[in-house]
Length: 167
Image: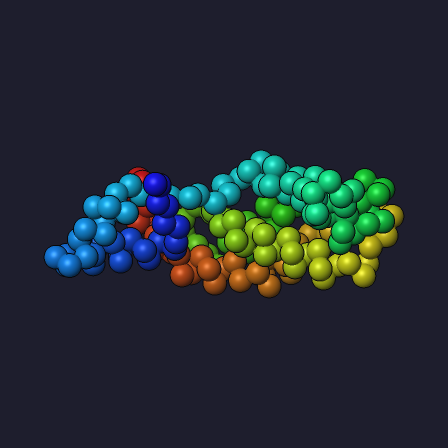
């Protein structure tokens, strides 16, 4: 049997408290031995593949409707692809990061990338057309609505600690 615990970085605090208690220290030795950090996106190129998956992944399987086409059928049918939006989307996240004046290297948690894409697609379905494009302003609005900056505020201590200790 393999056990994987997936959680926010705060789970490490729980691990420390389990270690200190005689009653729960066995939980650490059985289920919490190794720690592997799941990293977010560090560059525009990192976004390219994930955004491209929206253009190729279908539901239900074997349907002809990738996620991008479901939301923007006319645009998709004339060549619009989220995978080509990686640069402009990265710029929207980077601008939000700079406006927040964070002093650590930007990293986009997967949850906030997915939330931003969902917002951009659902907010713009009514504008679908053959010449549709997601503007930098659309992406900036979606990044803002995703609560990306608020999430980084909460994670700031983790990012700063990792930079200081080189993990």
